[in-house]
Amino acid sequence: MHSHHFDHLLEPAVTAVLETMFFSEPLGSSEPDSSAGKLEVRVPFSGEVSGVLEIRISKASARSLAASFLGESEESLTQSQTAQVVCELANMLCGWIVSKPGSQGSFDLGSPELLSPENDRPIGVPASQQSFAVENGTLTLSLYSSVAA
Amino acid sequence: MALNIMIVDDSPVMRVFLRKVVQLAGLPVGEYCEAGDGEAALKTLREHWVDLVLTDINMPRMNGEEFVRQLESDELLRDIPVIVVSTDSSHGRKEHLLKLGARGYISKPFLPETLRDEVEKVLRVPHA
Image (cartoon, rainbow over the protein chains, first blue to last red):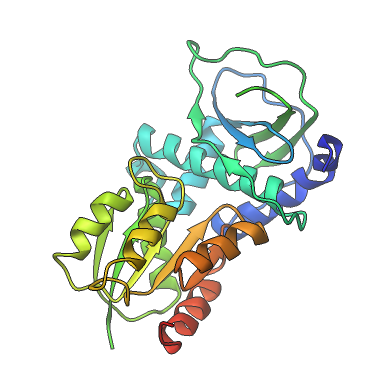
């Protein structure tokens, strides 16, 4: 598998994960959210291709997706629960993307890492990147391949 | 018959989610118990009656693979059916876990119906 084979997988991954696990859906393509109000998570993976999937999601979107995921009201959610759900979202998206294309090989996924100003170091130019409008904001996926995690 | 179900996952929100999906799947549940890793799960299984285990793979201390291996080698616990719930949908990983002793395997994302079907399949088939 080559890294460019991931390009066409980002949109179906977002659709499958949001529809099945979050009772939501992507609302079309979008520009990346450049505001400060967003959560960022990275998931390293290794296998036939190694790399990192990074997701960035508007905080308002993260809260509404977390509420759907847990079956709770947005008001009852803590910051920590919302962040944990975004980590799960990143984990599921990464798993879908790296192991869905009928590959016979196995991939190992690392633990999702919530980024903060202290650990948000740049890791180069993404091999694939797409942004999607979602409820209350934007979800951006950036896939970096052959990056030492 | 109501099932006592154990959920093994290091993510608290995933454990909440799995409870919700079990409910949506319409499975008859007696009691739930939870563990954050395989080691804690083995300890709990020795102290409580559990009919079915749902486990993640990637966990600290003892991961799902080692958990399934240890469960399978324990004469008292090996008959408890385990379904792995993982983000890894590759054929190789699924086959590996089933060979180790897991009775079922569900890839995330999944629908409640998928969980219900897998549970019903696993509970119908006696352990080899």
